[in-house]
Image 1 (tube, rainbow, N blue to C red):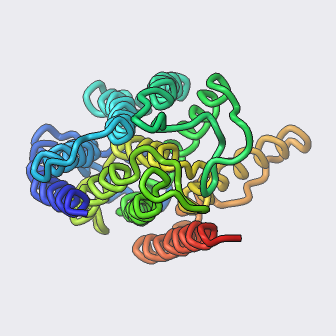
Image 2: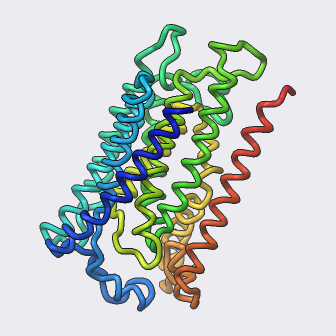
Length: 358
């Protein structure tokens, strides 16, 4: 518990104090968000020039919080924690390249969608292969080759299908957070709520660990405590960043931050054996992603069949639809945070109820 609290505190302080000089540096170099005419609501034009790539601060603060928390308490780092942070940092690097091309190289769209996907797949594949290695003294690896909900279920799907499953999760979740990152503080606040859930899940699994207290409903998880430490460190970094990212934002996280946050959420789901539960905990990300899928699918089908494309929403992702119908940005952000909190509460409730003996 000391490591959890200390890691969260360190990462929050680093992020809170480190974001201000990052803003100044980005402004000095004129590395700000470029808003294209016609995008979203007219109010977005005032955001043009706002510094972006703030996800760098979240990643650095998280890594420092995790490392220093372990250093000061003497708790050993684990394979699970290091691999989740690898996934976060690797996807953050893919996002950084995208942001770099947009800002430094003046390529308005950054990486092409195919190039970005290849980067995500490479990082995800490395993670997927490594996470089923490194057994501990109880022969538990950071992940298993089973699909999981509250715990593993069914038979093993094998290493190859497991890698494919992880790649689907990585691309879906990182892109889902990326799509959510369209309004000031929206993705940051929603991510904090899901990360808080994983702090609770990691603690609960630690207290009901099969390796220390064999019981009917114990958890076969290699490093539940370190999963909670990682979640707390990233959550602390997001808290510090949200101080500057809340409406009206002084800095945006960019793809660097959104892809990294998606990566850490997937990593935590995999090492805590809660793959499918992430669909509930991250319900807001699912809704926003599905709004884009629905919009694009209906548009293409109606255009092909009738020649007159139909739009379900005024614009997608969903948060921008509500801007178009006249909702204030802060109203959308706070209400979407509430939706995210309800999904997290539902997910945790199901996780807790699922522990009780049948």
